[in-house]
Image 1: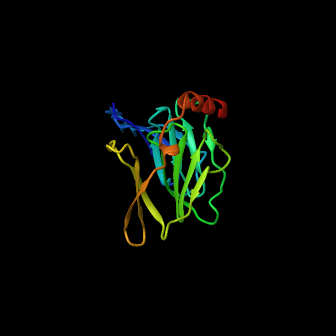
Image 2 (image 1 turned 45 degrees about the vertical axis):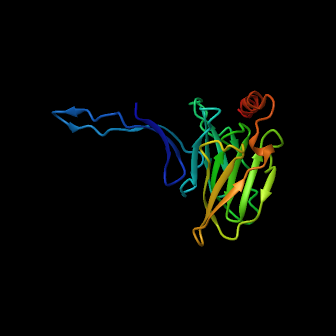
Image 3 (image 1 turned 90 degrees about the vertical axis):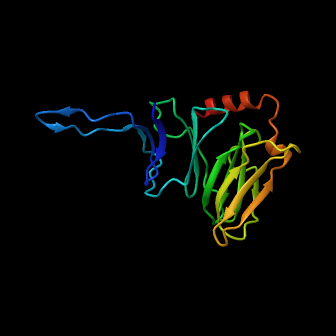
Length: 195
């Protein structure tokens, strides 16, 4: 079934069904088809969303990254029209550029900014980043984690900059890549409490 999540150019989170076909009526002509099944408008900022990603550990959670905050949405709560978690603006005179759930830790989110990377570890704290890496020489515009395991059991994050198009590799430290005891269960309870 061609169902997917997207964001509008104004920051809305939208659930779309492309399988819907127009109904033809001989008298009135073709009926206007509505492909949008559901729209969350609470993050409307009149700017596009910078990143959209579903959690590997919690398929009902979606991350959206905006200029000065990010939001976590629980998409199986149709009556809940706002994110279950919205970060405070703590970009320190920079703005967000991208973001991703950790592929190996259920409670970690990486947010790239114009001057570095913020790492949010929800087992540690949720009111601000647990780690801020301010090493960028130019705006980071892209990030991606490796999709395979290395023989040395390391995890690498690739990120690119705007100025020269340079690709960097960051060796993610052990405490940010290795799942903690009962982390998935504890983070699941954390998201439930946020509701």
